[in-house]
Image (cartoon, rainbow, N blue to C red; front, side, top):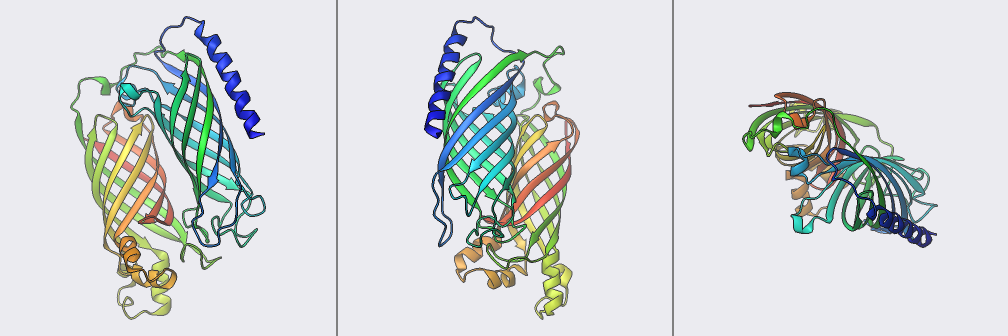
Length: 400
């Protein structure tokens, strides 16, 4: 069925593409609306002992979005990026254990390479999935502890045909599902996928207003900014697979940073973050641990130095951050309860943190406003192991 669908999709796409060749059209100068159908096939990559046997993973995507064809700074910097929403349905290779999933994923796609490789694209998306089977349905499913999970995709595509109205692409990449440690077990579900997609492009929508923003003027290539963020996270206390059914507690975060806005669309920052773990505080007070009971608030805290990079496209920012823990006293006690005695892994998770998510800015970042407010959703991790899911609100001030 999948093979037949792929062949039909390719034939229809090529016929429409040939028809499009006969039309003489002007180069697009505004926004172009598009609809894209995509079929993927791949395999789940096992990530724990006794991982269930799986067959092929089959996914069907329908995406809607817009492509920025304008001669603005953002359009030039990202080589006319696309952004939109993807709706997907997936068969996960073992109906009795993993079932099926449906996803809603905001995405951005752009061409980061030189004009000699302009047929290659990168696509990143982060959103949510509903998975029909979890650990509660089958105890051999340690990958998914809750039916609602994060969904992340990272793909590279190459154009087979790029016409005025129809594009055909092949690609490959990685698809990940995880609930961000909000319900155990949470080993995560990772799939390696190949893709064939057919995209129909509508007529360009040219704005009646002048297409240049303030940021398109010959401003300095570097602008300094200050950033504040407050976050509220939640998770279960435990390792990746146990204990199951524990209570969910909050993690409070405050972050202050300063940085440089490069070329109006890439924010590089550094600063400090303070966190307070409610789970840590309660464990310290319940057990009256003599190493920490003298100041449970302080010993349930975490202070780390962070480095972050955010890629801005319009109202959205793809945010990636890494950090070095300067103070996290209770983590060793926690680690000994649920993890292996491997000291190397312990050191990596104790000292290095990571964070990834998506921010939405109230004011379009292309305008480079002096003041802007954003809300965000992200996953926080100890090195590569999920720690908690977080919602944030922040403020950024740009010096002009």
